[in-house]
Image 1: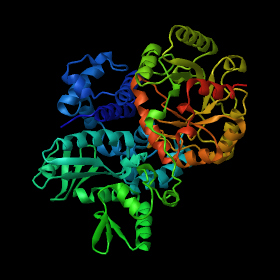
Image 2 (image 1 turned 120 degrees about the vertical axis):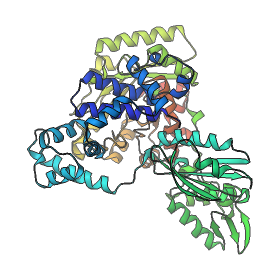
Image 3 (image 1 turned 180 degrees about the horizontal axis):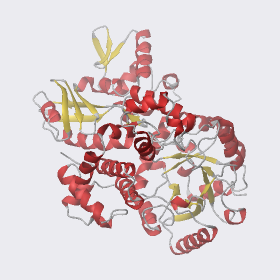
Image 4 (image 1 turned 90 degrees about the horizontal axis):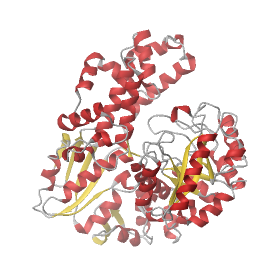
Length: 575
């Protein structure tokens, strides 16, 4: 059974959660958290490094103890340390961690102080008003816990796109090597680049004698076979993800791919258009009475009803069918359009790789420029830079640029936007930079009016280039702040600054709909990696997917410009 980096990271996070419930040494907890982040950020699968007997301690954030546990997990599928924690902490208590916004520290308080050992206990305590008696909780938190319990009970489990992509790529590669298989494609919301994915649909074209269905249900990561047939089978992978495999004929492949990729509302609108033209559209093809008139390719399906080809990311019934009918679909941004990255960290703050390593990785990705944007001093937990340290890094960047010409480094900072909208550094130091990236990492609970005014005041600063991760959401971990994003986008237009689309798959922030709003207002979007390690530049693929969902074209994104053009645009924001 294959062990993926995501599996190892999940185990490390689980161990850290349980250690926190037990009030263990915070340094040990932090080591597991850092290890999980490092593992998730790797571009190579750890199982391959273990097979090659590589020294895992050379990886950032991985010491001898974690390296040994990685080997153990890959060899056994688990870790003895986790098994022991399972023995000490009741399963129902562990289930409390699944309640949104609760977290291990709060679970520890509830467990230790109120003897809450299950979701049922938690519900009863909240309804009885006992939770508000705990210091740091209060009536508002008690109400929120009841809401979170209700949300948890009704929600279908969804997985971040980066997690599903890893499993999908491995499974597609596995199926492509089965005898008789001609084509394999992962469809559904993954192909539409949605931020989260509920289940995975895979289509395959294969010869009649191909053992593809038998091989599929015997895939080594399968824990349960839900159904097995000659044209459709369903399995559940070890992480709980359901995967459906459909065997389709070559003449129906395009129709099936269109059907199992488009959202339900997109497909309904397409079928209605077909009916108005006397056509029947389904997963088997496009039919005029009993005659198949299209279906071998997706393009033929759309052309049969008078539409140009609609890219997968747009198939959400948000005007794409009308635009395709009028031949005015956008020419969506491609990964190769990006020329550089305007938000990256090194180990000068909370990055996991050195300055030199990050620059080398950016060069390897073909970038012609990279902005180094460490955190400012107020964010002490992330090793934020004081004015003196920032000046020292600026000097280092100047020295690098003097000696190298294959990539240019831009001097930047990710400056904290304080509660009142002031920036965390003085104008004297900010004015020496090439760009200023403003962001929020505190006071998430302000009202919409307060939060909006806070951001607008920051953007009115003399030196302000890009608003980073505008909604501050963390998918499955933290909800977005309350902010009038349209007003923020319009202010960016008036001020002449830019909005970030943060490519980290746990953020993917700007939302796709706000990408469209930025485009409509003429505000350029920066598709940035927010890289904290050399492998984090790979996240840009998810940012580009989100940008495509937001109808963005090459010209709508600032970092598709040449170095000279970017410097000119950034200079306009700097006083």
